[in-house]
Amino acid sequence: MKNRWAALAIVFISFLQFTINWFCIVPAFDGIVTDMEISFAQVGIIVGAFIAGYGLAHIPGGWLAERFGMRAAMLSGIAIQTAGAAVSATAPSFEILLAGRFLCGIGGSIYIGSAIGLTAAWFRGKELATANGIIQGGAFTLGAAIGIYAWRPVIVAFGWQDALMIGALIGVATWVFVLLFFPTPPGSSDDVLEGHHLGKDSLKRVFGNPALWIMGIALLGAYGSYFSAAQLLPHYAQTTFDVDASAGDAISVILMLSGIAGGIIGGVCADRFFGVLPTFIGACTLQGLMFLMVPYVDLFGVQVAAGVIGASLIAAFVPWVSIPGQRDSGFLISDVPTAIGLMLTIVAVGGATVAPVFTRIAATWSFDVAWIFQGVITIGFAFLALLAKSRRAPAVEVGRGAEFS
Image (spheres, rainbow, N blue to C red):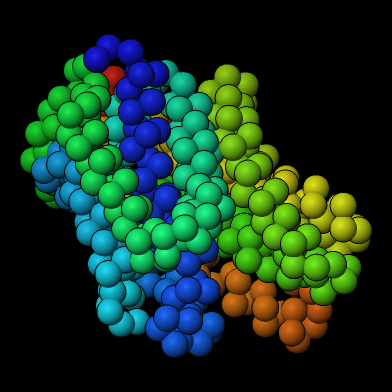
């Protein structure tokens, strides 16, 4: 295969199973609560089990790709996530269901690092942020929307267990698809296929690079605030404007689907107009301003804010996730999955902590203060990225040698 856009289409298709099997359990929660006789509070534990596996496996997944190659890691990740989906579908108890979701998260984490690394191998120096925008904004959002919304009629027709098994079968089909059509980039076969790159030099390049740590922290506020808003903005709208649950759900839909536009906008702006760092800071600043605006607008204003928040987070995430794959980053292609894993592990702190802090502030003072808190940390953390601009990594490939611009 010589066409990088055809290669991206294959990655796009493989990405769908990742998010479908992440989110298709959401419409199954009511059936799970009834059949397993658990409290609705325990649903949060089901969500947390996936996130725990997903967060813990980012760096080990990168090491797996470096040791055995991205092809092996992608196939392993899909297989593990599929196995987790099958365990979830056949779980006889709540504890087994949690184990299945944890396994699902591990597999998804292993998969995504290699998927991003493979995208970098095909697009390094050639519209990498745009390519990541299509994957992160398009495939991720489309797969999540299918899992959350299109899976509800599947559950109604077949029951939640069979519906989850259909998700697992999609994983099996994707595994075969990747096995047959894995798009090996020309000139990168050793990095992508062979592996054997894990060693002290690769670990030093990744973990000794201050820019990765700085950029991981720089997204922490925006990342955590996004997931906090996704969960709590609908509730805020219902309680503040006295609207029904469907109006609150509409805000979630707006926030999620706006990520498709955000991915494209962020990629094009980073590649063609402003560069990685200005696009990242600008998108985070816009997201933060929307949080600051929320206390002062009506329901329509909240809907607009939700759309901008969803788009701007993905617009910031796209150049952010492209940093290790840039031609002048100082990293080998084989380093990219581990570098991405490190950044995602750091930013997961925000995903885990901002929502609880938000709810504590809202309960102690008010929702208005909580939204302002999110706006301040989103913008404040983002400007830490300026500290990364002057950082340099040892050059290992032909390029300008700068970390990123």
